[in-house]
Amino acid sequence: MPMRAAIYTRNEFNEKGEVITDVAKQEESCRKHAEKHGYLITQVYHEANVGQDDERLELRSLRSAIWKRNIDVLLATKPDRLYYDTNRLARFIKEADLMSVRLEFVEAPLDDEYWLRESW
Image (cartoon, rainbow, N blue to C red; front, side):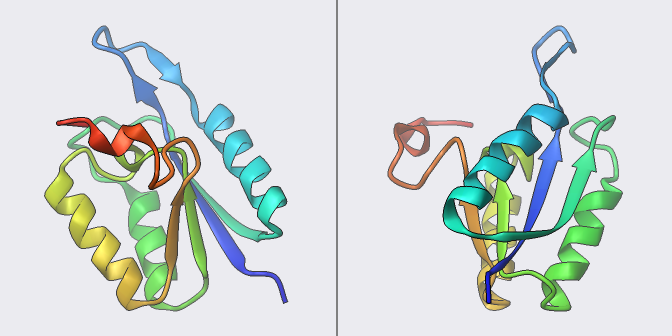
């Protein structure tokens, strides 16, 4: 049985507030990754029009799916699509690990230089 995967996307903006990577492009990247690894996409969560501090209802739904054990793998293009704040991201990663959900960042694999930057 294939692993059940969820995709989480959120628009990425530049300093001027212009979208530089939209949710459709992120979903496409994640779908290609899922196909390559034989994952079954069971849910896609799009946060299209929120800022950094806005309440993110799709993230809340995703966390609920994790706690209900409805997914095995969470796909996102980069960690900052989930959280900019590294402390909140670390807590989320621990939460997913507790529920045996693997996180995979399609454009920033764990062996990538992305993780060596001082801030993201």
